[in-house]
Length: 163
Image (cartoon, rainbow, N blue to C red):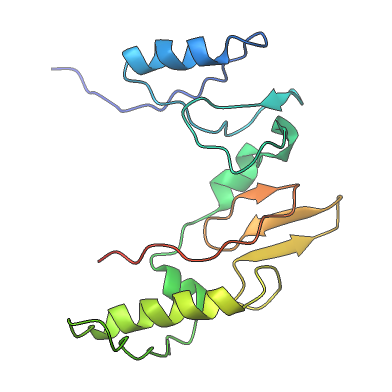
């Protein structure tokens, strides 16, 4: 028998204005979910019918990370390890109205969420979710995923704690 290898194929799909929804439905029927491009050499407006947009701003493909940056990024094994390298994540008290007693890791997640509600989102400490660079124009980097964008990220509050 021959040997098999799994290969990843990266394809950028371009369309004319107004056809994006049709392309989305076409790929849905094929059970192909469109993702953000890894690299795009054309600076064109970007819109993905399979992803929810955060707002109505036009995103340009130049704001995506180039392939060499993507290859260099290694996702942290644990988000908390990335945000608190010394490993001493404090615990929040269980809310009084909660009937179930929270476990240690759940209290730590709650602490992280509550602290994030009060903190600035952008900065240089490990507690910040975004870092800002102005070396080649303004760029914001998600400290957890490593993704970059040229637009200042919107403030966010709340979230889900799942176990």
